[in-house]
Image (tube, rainbow, N blue to C red; front, top):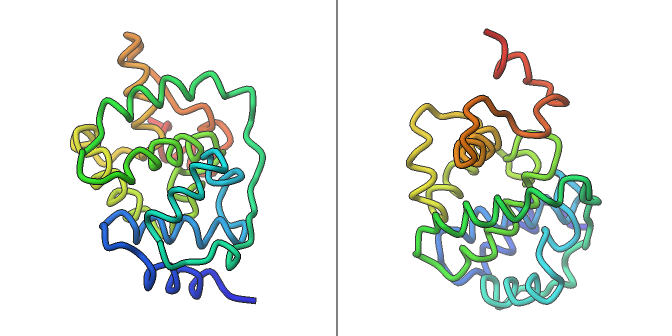
Length: 182
């Protein structure tokens, strides 16, 4: 049985060379071992997942992965369209992979932990890189280094004219006090 690090390294050896692929390799390696909160196929349709893998990692065999996934909280599905509009409106325009990253980030937002942890990233800085690479217009507005999930939902709330807002999973987060205590 391979480790997440071995899958990550193998993915890196087979990538096309776009900067987002290193972050994506981390997400895939973690997901393959049930690390993080990502659903089946990282929130993509099965066909989109296989297209993404073929495009980003053309010499990687998906058979090397454990296709693991967690279930999505269907009570929160309604918010996905708002997130999709926000992310699509703020694409960097640098890579074909950005369109897949929209759905992957949305799936991560439906988890109950910090976004970087739900995505299966190994450190918060990886998420900042993902956001800057794929959603630069949006990411550049996070000038106070707000937690990413909180920042995304704050953007949605401000679009609706609501200026006190928190991500739906904040109440169950272990860091709730550090974000919301005055």
